[in-house]
Structure formats: structure tokens, C-alpha cells
Length: 237
Image (cartoon, rainbow, N blue to C red; front, side):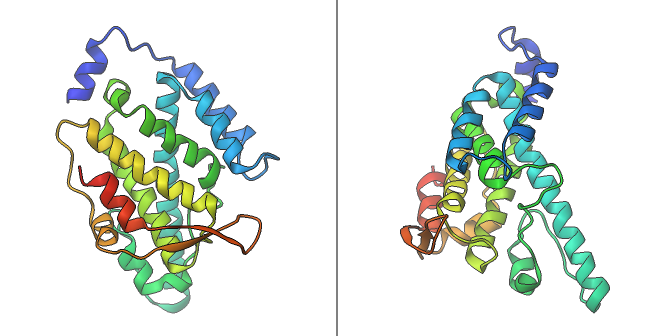
């Protein structure tokens, strides 16, 4: 694997696992829903904390952990639906859209209330931004391929929630979606042999509708986001 050969063969990469653990604990416990700071302020603070190779490793772990726990949460919801109704729901990580089309009203958005304590609009948004801004260095510290898969998975969960009503489309949600799209594009551009786009992304890219974006503290519409257009702009490189 190219990334592993570079990691083992480069003397410039000096990682500190103990510092990574300390950074992860700090990010997990100081920020999130319980913080007094607004989400954009938290994102700015976290991105400053993770602005080196150890921080990039932590950011990659946050994205992967959020995706893994969200998948586990959805599996539990599907099992609960089956237990109560006998209705069997299929949960496919590569494409959550068929699940939402079949049972959207019965599902809760799984990125909120993660057991790991990560909040989508604080730690996850910041981690995604760090991964994108350091995309050319990803293969020096980790394997970018499974990480890109997790970025697309979180993007799928975010956009499907916005489109089907489980997620209020405010500026925080729009920021998460926008950064997921731009980061996916940055990671793809940094890869020698980028993979095909997942079916969930290709489906959204065929659309051209704009969602209203609201103020987080009230009903006022402050802008809009066209998910399909943003994906075509960033991912068709």
C-alpha cells in the first residue's frame, strides 16, 4: 500500500500516539452541545487544535468514529422497527437513501446523540475541515481510502436527513454539508487512483433543487444550498 510505504519510509512523519489521545479527549470533552460557545466558534477552535499531523490523525478518527456509531445507531433503529412491527429494514452503509425512502418517518437522524459524545456541528464539522485542508498529507499518516468512504457516508447521512426532514436545514447543517462536499473533493484530488463516487452521491448530483437555509435561532431564511450543484462543482474533477 502506497500510504503505508510512505508512512514507514518517511523520516519527516513523527507521530505521537499519547498526544493524539490527549487531543481527542480534549476535543471530546471541551466541545459539543454542552459548550457555551456557538458551533462556528467551536469549529474554529477545534481546527486550530488539530492543525498538525497528530491533529490530522485525530480528525480522521473523529470522522470514522462518527460514521461507525451512526451506522450502529441506524441498525438498532431498524431492529426496533422489526421488533415492533415485523417490518424488516435493510441498512447499507454505502447508500442510506433506499432505507430513508422506505422508512424515513420512522427513523431518527443518527448523527445526533452519538454515544462517543461527538456533535455533528462541532467536532465532526471541524474534523472534516481539518481532513480537507490537509488532504495532501493524508497518505503520510493514514490510509485515505477508508477515510474517504467514511466522509461519503457522513455526507450521505447529512444530505438525506436534510432532504427528508429529520434535520432542520440551518446554517450549522449547511456548513457541515458544504464542508463534507469540499473535503471529499480535496481528498479525491490528492489521490493517485481515486475511487468511483458512491451511488448516494451520484443520485444527489443529478438534482438541481435548492434548500432554504435558516437561522439556527429562529425561522428566518438566511440563504440556500443546492447540494447537487455543490457536488458537481467539487467532485467532478
